[in-house]
Length: 338
Image 1 (tube, rainbow, N blue to C red):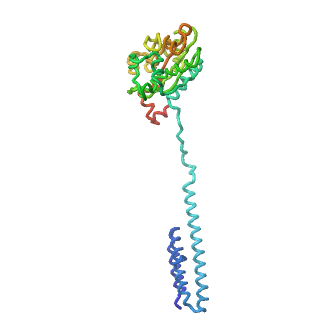
Image 2 (image 1 turned 45 degrees about the vertical axis):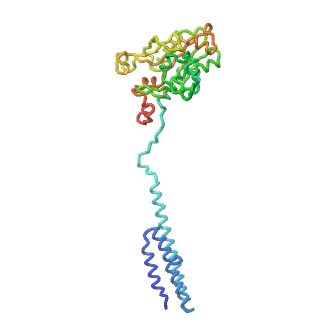
Image 3 (image 1 turned 180 degrees about the horizontal axis):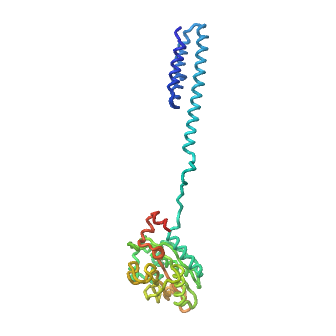
């Protein structure tokens, strides 16, 4: 007989014995049961057998094929189950391991300082007003009594985005917008970003300010002193001394710088306060009559005061930070302290 089924069984058994993985199984399934596999080759020889041999050999080949398919299916099920258990072990939670603490965000110290300033002045009856970051020269300078060629413009190196259009150098223009739209009484603060061509350990090209304005009948300098003293004590502590020092601003007259006793050395003198025992925190003054005339107010009938502070300056003093750039480096080691 040309077709020896026993030899074919031995070859199939050898192929089955070589299976050690799911990849091997796929290979053997093709080499034994595939269109060009061992059983397919045997069927090619089957055609030359006599009718009696075909009955006997055909039965044996079918038994071999069925047995081989059953064995391959069993092996495949075993390998798939093993792979499933392996994946489950990899994805399983080991309850003996310490938990992973997710990173949580913190309120940025600038935002926290903004919120505290807003809280204090809101408690004193001030509303919040906002304005555009890009202003015309008129609102940023001229309406604030700083005409063209005025020396005060040299104090604010400006980013011009077009002729007569600037990135605002302070939030004082918001005061002009408010007074143009509202008759006295006015009591607002104007928080926001401002821009100046200035950069060192205490200045950056973009920083933040909060400016305030109070206008009504019979507003006096004593009102200014009282409100700003309350602000200082709320922000830095009731025992922090406050002093008002004469100064100059083109849109206020008289004007004053506001200093607080150094919170680092408690007034004894240190590097932060340059040995003076005092830290400058904001500027203030009574609104200049010319500013009132520009917005249509009668300076003979009303009066008011304005003030402005750098939020970064307040935050640096409040948190003991010695370099303004720390606020903008996005260093989690720094930010996570607050």
